[in-house]
Image (cartoon, rainbow, N blue to C red; front, side, top):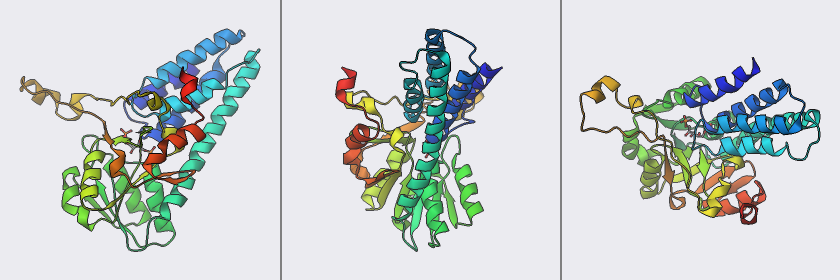
Amino acid sequence: MRTMLLSETAESIKNMEIRGAGRIARAAVEALADYARSLDVSDPAVFRQEMNKAAGILIETRPTAVSLPNAVRSVIRALDGFESVEAAKKAVLSRAAEFIQRSEHAVERIAEIGARHISDGDILLTHCNSEAALGCILEAHRQGKDIEVYATEVRPRGQGLITIRTLNEAGIPTNYIVDSAVRHFINEVDMVFVGADAIAVNGAVVNKIGTAQIALAAHEARTNFIVAAETYKFAPRTILGELIEIEERDPAEVLPREVAEELPYVRVRNPAFDVTPADYIDLIVTEQGAIPPELAFTVIRDYLGWTIEEWR
Ligand code: RUB
């Protein structure tokens, strides 16, 4: 019965019913906690083995959002050194609850810190649907700042629709534009706010496909480009030069299969994310404070507690 939640969550992450790096991480941790609760075994080694298997299933669902392995591994690390299943279970459940609470609190802190960078009268642009980035915009509005937003459509999955619904509900004047209209409007924009799926040690940010193009346009127009991201979205393994995998999704999301079949020489490419170099990023707002992208290493060292030595 409980295994159902694990496989259902894995499936929902894969098909994007659950989406957005923070939500994915919290859902995976919840599924892992639920799985731990349901495991009816008495041997701690078997318990650990089963938990590792479940962690693997969750981690494999979407390869880019580093929040997912970071969150799952933090729960799995709580398993270390227990003699009884009861004790290990308790440790896992309390680590999972702590992660979820911290993750939610991080979004609130980011909103408070990010909103400080938004001034009365600002025109903002956001891409995709990021609870961290939207949190900053909503908080600025809540504080009574008079703001206006440009929100992109976000081909091919249209996450912009979720964003404009939220902005509309909050009563924020919003302009809905196709992704390719960003360059046309960028001079009207004071500040771009986006989220992140992963941040590399060199400060490069991986986010929804199209983000890098927007950053380029913003850079050319001297428009501030701000990333809102929890510290657990920083990717420790990039310290060792490991590249962040960019998920490439089903071509049918871009072109209906029946049309594609008529065009044998055409190959549809559908990367879900791209990489924005640190040079185009002015600030990364984390729950620990706002940093320039060049300080990404210190976040990995100080808040994720990973060092190069650990991986030797
Ligand atoms: C979502 C996306 C979001 C980040 C950050 O992509 O790129 O900008 O995940 O979101 P997808 P959050 O829709 O493919 O999951 O701030 O909510 O974690």
